[in-house]
Image 1: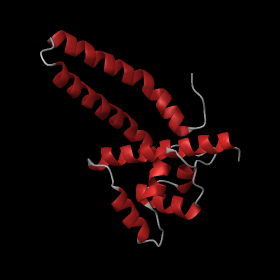
Image 2 (image 1 turned 90 degrees about the horizontal axis):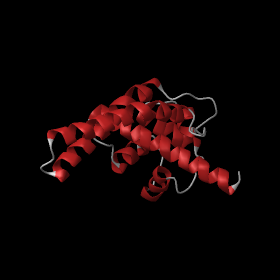
Image 3 (image 1 turned 180 degrees about the horizontal axis):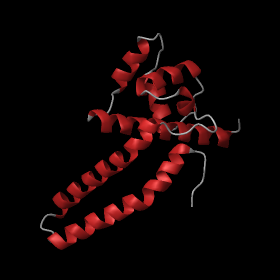
Length: 156
């Protein structure tokens, strides 16, 4: 594997992990902590250091560890092949179903932040911001879903 391929693979793994973390937030209301993930893996005789988790989830280094992927797949309730980024493996249904909700939650946070930050903004301006964000969500979601199904694909 070339250095460029390794970097791309690390970034793709990070995207899948962050997507699974987002889905966990949508399902439970909070992001699983490193401590929770490491404890879950430890119960299965798998070790995950904080530094390894950090570079995996941030895409700094590519990891090829089948047993670790299997343990993380059990934790996130997905197929290990999805987590490993094997060619032709589709995004799990539960992940696809949560993408809309995750995107809507992010947009709601942005709307709330804009309303608080802009202070005395007119109702028309706030509605315009909301319409823009809603339009942005509806335009980018299909591309995001396609990318999640094939993280190595390039979309224009």
